[in-house]
Length: 274
Image (cartoon, rainbow, N blue to C red; front, side, top):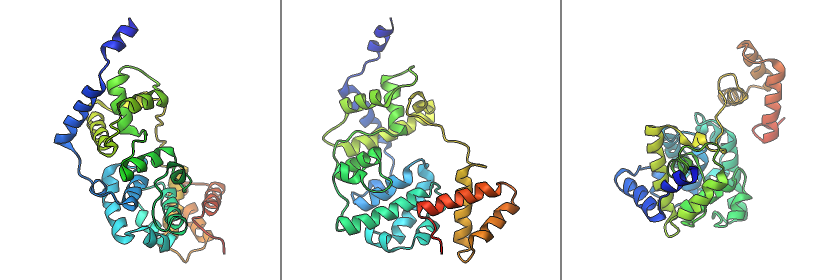
């Protein structure tokens, strides 16, 4: 009986693409990174959009591109200036990685982002999913990748009612239905359809094994990291002891936790001991 139900829900590649593109034709979202094929601008958008809502990214993206218009400008900029502009997006490691990528592209690739998956994955902060997205959006090459909206679409059409759907099963369906002639447009269409599904049906990507709910921010190590960085950017002349005393006054974190977090930021390259 279960096999019969699953077969009844089968949808052909042609029908599936027609539905997705039909919706996209009438409801395509308009973002600045979709109006360009510039590798640098698309890379910045991909790094910013990781685990961050589009509504928060768009104004920051415009300001970032205006301030650092290309790889060379970002590579030359001070880390403190980059982090100040990044404030509000969270996950500051992405800003650190983006600056390191810019330096590597200028130094090793003559200022041109490589169009090779392996070389992209060798750059700081770029995993296989981000590298594949860059290959699709920058170079229009049909590399499969998943993100929350795309997972939502494939679960809705091909795994309805299923739980713990593996990424390998989702990627198999994605590969079978991929528009290899125009993957850039296809992924935009998938993401917009997925955003509509999330607004009307809820986040179906929770049914996948690859889904990880974000831990609460308040009182977390992420919040403490952000507090240390914010204080250091506001008061660049402060030594760590001053920052430590300020945080201890808030009585939110204990001294060992603050010191441990600070030293991890030093190891990651946010601070240099002097």
